[in-house]
Amino acid sequence: MNPEVTEQRVRTLEAVREIKNLMARLANHHAANQQEQILGLYALGLPDVRAELPLGVYEGKAGLERLYLGMAGLDGDHRGRLHMHALTSPLIEVAGDLQTAKGIWTCPGHATDRNPADPSSGLEAAWVWTKYGCDFVIEAGRWKIWHLRVHGIFRARYDKSWADGDEVRGAPGGASAGPPPGVPRPDRPPTSWWQYRPDAVYPNDPAPPQPYESLDDATAY
Image (cartoon, rainbow, N blue to C red; front, side, top):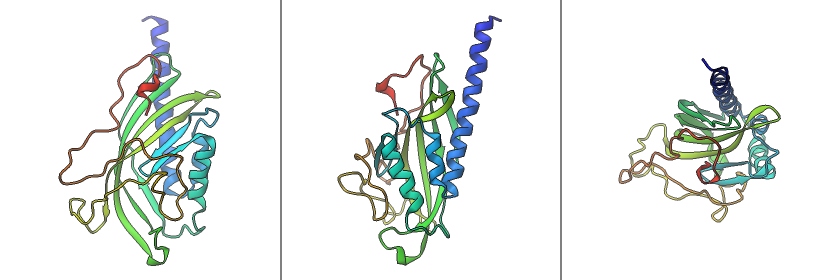
């Protein structure tokens, strides 16, 4: 076999392994309310680094620090808080030039938290399913998250069906509407928003990545 082809395959497999570990660290830190640890997983040296959540987009190092350090602080009391998002059905494409990669994950999970609009109401438990679409880049010799996009699938109280009309969430958040009390304000509204509704068709978004040679901004997550 051509040595160059062998090296390309080996480096691609190594990239996939490192990216899976990178995302697993994100999931584990998030579940343990170690939000400040997540910052180090991003390519903070790039001006267009970003994280997009259903409530809005956080841009650049300053936006990510506002998001994760703000979530780490909240009211300072993490007793009872638990946010677990399993990473399933990974689909990772490493660029032919080995400088970037793209991946998607379906993330079944659950969340236990206080209602930010009424912290005195006690803990609430919910099923939360999302989908991640991510771009990755090598920074200082390590694979890092460049763009992370969290796309909603459904959210419902643990004792209610997500097909129940009372459980369907109606409107996105964002910079214009403002996040719930205590949640850091995003820089701009989300680029898209979706939650399950009985009358809606699942859009399969973010779309699965296709093999590519180098990252095109037009297809970035």
